[in-house]
Image (cartoon, rainbow, N blue to C red; front, top):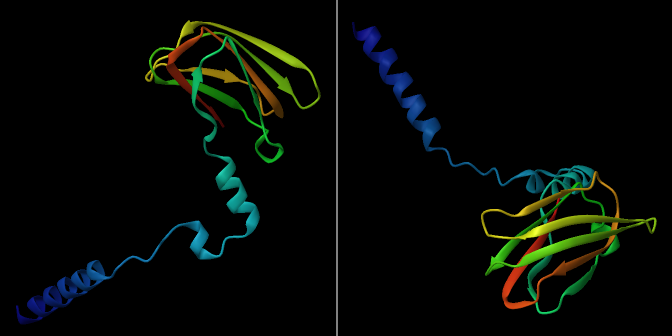
Length: 141
């Protein structure tokens, strides 16, 4: 019986000591990950392209900088009010254009996702209903 008590006390002490050890894991960047993995981790997250763009005019143009120009999805969502988007025109890296007819208002809960299959986007043209009280944001993934 004494032997069982000693084994139980030792095993309980070991689990308590292990649980008291602090965790110093701060993510992949502190563990010396090579640059390719760090770049892939960054590229697999949403990138803000335009934040709180107010629909003052009917047309707005956004030029995308070269390093962040390839996306699979563009997401539009309202940040203030209910901006009404008529259409979005994407200008790709090769100069070709693609029209997306939206024809609906955006909200914070129900945005619009445009599937663009990883092509390089040079410019985003947004045709919206002019409303200075409404604003939207564009995210790329």
